[in-house]
Length: 171
Image (cartoon, rainbow, N blue to C red; front, side, top):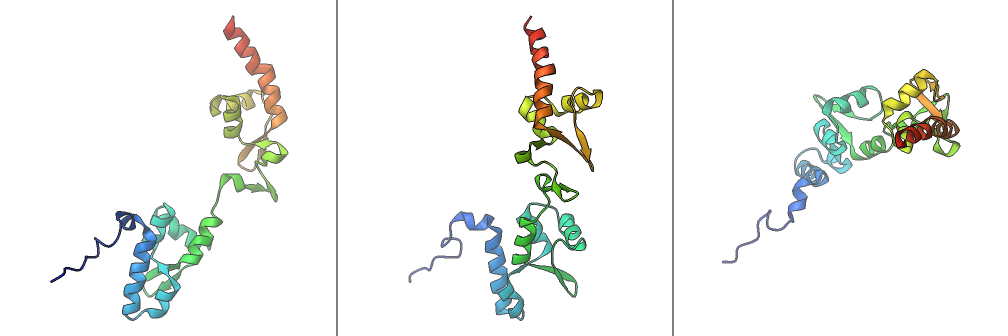
């Protein structure tokens, strides 16, 4: 009698960590049961969507409530279409996409940078940049809740204050 390889022997170990494998398995189980129309759409639960996106379940609920993520409620359970989840992931909030009055806040091509970007460029902590803007050594403008610094102002701050600081440390 020849023994057939079992489920675990036929697949590499990577399948276990792939969330899409489990979705397909669940959808196959659903096809065998009653929900064939739902299975053909490839849907996931709130918990699965959170795991796929790397966020909490609460974040998924908030996205649904704010109409940023499409979901449907089947009596007691929420289901999310995988295509809708992918659209949400593509359009998800990012600080680099932030706009103020229709324009990008940190448009690096036009020379506008955030405090953290300026700090990285200058090789100093972000708190030093905040302090420099507060005391007037570095010119920055407030747009909404964000500080925006122009590249010319960063260069001027570097020449006037940081180079002077390096000279005094060298002596």
